[in-house]
Amino acid sequence: MGIEQDFKHALASWASGVAVVTTNSSGLLYGLTVSSFSALSLDPPLILVCLGHANRMAPMIEASGGFAVSLLDTTQQSAAQYFARTGRLPTADFVEIEGQWTAGGQPVVAGALAWLTCTLHRAIEEGDHTIVIGRVIEASARAEASPLLYWRRGYRELADGS
Image 1 (cartoon, rainbow, N blue to C red):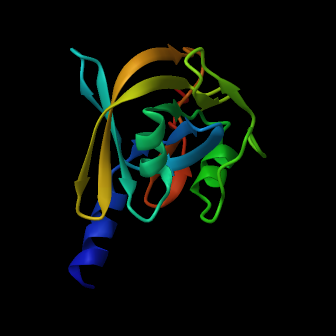
Image 2 (cartoon, rainbow, N blue to C red):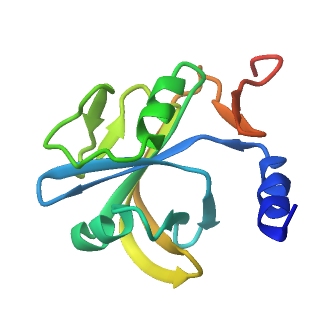
Image 3 (cartoon, rainbow, N blue to C red):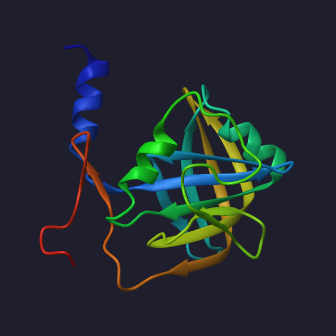
């Protein structure tokens, strides 16, 4: 194996929650399942997501000036798979996956474990991705749900459900 395959295999060993990034740009919404999502700062409240250059998401976020992140629960594997599918086009409303609109006008996955809406703080191109930094302006979380996890190229749940 070459370094690219070794790199992918090593990163697949990192378990993470499953996040869907969405935006509403000129009345069209689009979403994407991402593997790189992280808290960045508490003061000010900042998060980051990494978006591949081959995807339309980063330019749509830059055009709209904002985005949302839905953190999925164990019942939402179909949403993760839908937003991971390539070739989808932006739509005027939710298609196939139940969604909701935040007070700030951003689309989120309905029933998500948690969601955050952000204004675009900064976008930095690095390698084959754009690092999108968002300033959190709204956030909501459900205490009674368990996170959907992704590990070694498969969806997982916490063993004890907590």
